[in-house]
Length: 421
Image 1 (cartoon, rainbow, N blue to C red):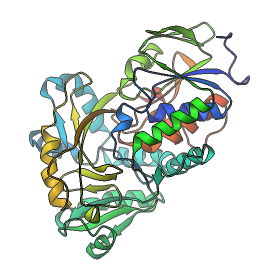
Image 2: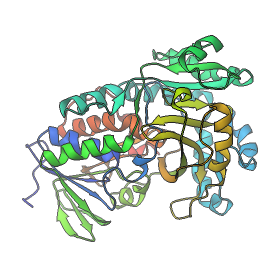
Image 3: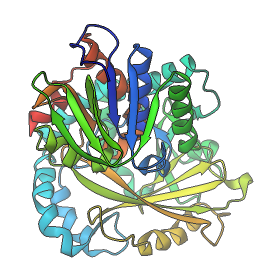
Image 4: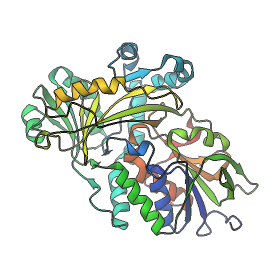
């Protein structure tokens, strides 16, 4: 490794810790800027949490997970075994500081502030992916089929606040009546009478393929992959990072920490104490009668699950579980959701083909961290995307590349600074 170049002096050697979709998009974008990139991860590219999401690239997902009044609903949700929110009670003492910050983010004023902060990031999300894919000839992986949420009549009123806030910031979202919903998705149960549709959102019918396509482009451009475990990050007198893995130690000109739910200890190594926790997510694969399958990812608001038409079947994703990174998976709730899913979409298979659990990297204000580390501005943090990892990966990559190049970004980044907590 050559002596660390000063920032802004030309091509640099940059390590990206994390080969999920955020790390891959970031490495590829930095490589386009002429930098020499090395991705470090203990898993193959895209094999972690990026593998199992619902495939949505949302351009309307500006509202935080915490909503006004959630403090009233949370106790009931935690006691309901079929609720979208589950807590392993042994984990509660560790989760409590995060949960208190989460509730603090649920006031009407904070919800509006967070939505305003997220708008410039989210609205550029699809175009950032599209630009990256076009530049590298990646075709057929992402389609702009929209993102649909459906509700029975008794749940329709609960959508009004989100729709009003989304429209306030100029985003396109359509409210569908029963007839319009039938025209768009004729296969779903007729008791769903209200829809909220984001027509400009995209869908990756195999998220792993997108990760693999980005990884292939990185390799083609001369990028390197190191499959290993990061054991330490040391900052030199000039601010340049040296990264120790079980494969050895290497000094780089810069580094980016984009390791998703596993980013917290790495961030601490570079002076950032960020309240990152993990919302564990589950999915099942179900076979479907294709004549009656959904044509786009569809969220069913009465039971809080998504049915996404992947290439090899319908992916059922549902729920948030707080249990940390070490507890074994508990598939009981997602298995119960299969019965509700078959009611919602007649024609689904009776038996799951596959089960999966992953770790969403979540911050209590539902905003990612994008910005320089306190210990050195030659280390950039890019994690904590929660439910929007796939959505925000390419635009986050663009923001990171702008920071490193010293370019003005179209996204105000102060709201995402790691020092905001």
